[in-house]
Amino acid sequence: ATPTALLVGTGRGAQLGVLIRGPEVLESTRRVDTVVLDKTGTVTTGRMSLVDVHTAGGVDPVDALRLAGAVENASEHPIARAVADAARDKVGELPDVETFSSQAGLGVRGVVDGHTVVVGRPALVARHGVPPELAAAQADAEERGHTAVLAAWDGRVRAVLVVADTVRSTSADAVARLRRLGLTPVLLTGDNATVARSVAHEVGIEQVIAEALPEDKLAAVTRLQADGKVVAMVGDGVNDAAALARADLGLAMGTGTDAAIEAADLTLVRGDLGAAADAIRLSRRTLATIK
Ligand code: ADP
Ligand code: MG
Image (cartoon, rainbow, N blue to C red; front, side, top):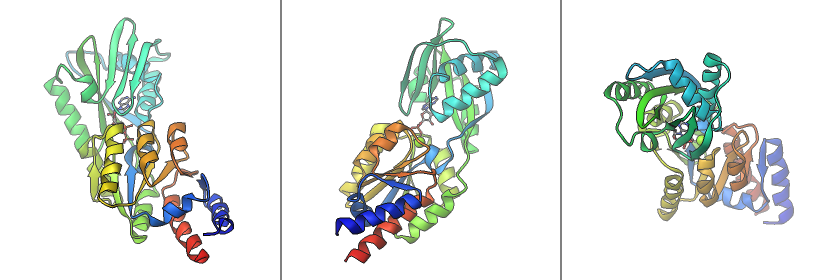
């Protein structure tokens, strides 16, 4: 491939809303046969909204929202934004959080008004078990395709916060186009399997890998490569960065985090998955004209 022809391809990419790190990227783009798609913020908009709060032990839902919202206020995760925004709507200004920490793909922790508050997945929050009424509320929300996170403080799980996300209007069409290019789509998410299957069904993906921590996302890409696949990975989050760097071709949503964009070879400027199909088609055409 001559460098000039590749650069022409790069300029065309910019018109399509795809930023390409360097002309050599087109070379690996052409050989891709598997495309791994992150769910939240990639297949879905990642603009979540809080739809329900369930509490146990007579806790006032507004108090639960106040404590959880104060901790989530310090996080940039889409779930965190939904919880913090809803909390601010209900209680006004949120209390300060001290000794805040976040664990990618798990949740957040901080001290609010002297209470140690943890919000996130059961693996992070529910060391001491989930009260049955909250476990039932969580299962029910997930059955409906919503994401449910737990909130605990003072050593006990006291609330379930239910957030809803929307599948991007362009995702199903983009998956169909990727398939027509001969690629096998795989949905890869830190969210639970019920929610993941519901989204996969909506956009036409059969293979689902759920409850994946950042290191599991990396391992999933590595495993596909060990099976002889040439893997493209599309993601938006800090939790996708390692997998994006490992993939034969890493694509970041332009609407995503800096960590994802820095780890990727291509950036889909408008956050539209259809641009991934455009980029792959473009690289094949560009390299075909060179031969
Ligand atoms: P995805 O892989 O779909 O982009 P993430 O890996 O970012 O999802 O998150 C996986 C799961 O971790 C979420 O579904 C949620 O249960 C939990 N989680 C992560 N960050 C937070 C947070 N700030 N607040 C609450 N829960 C969180
Ligand atoms: Mg994501």
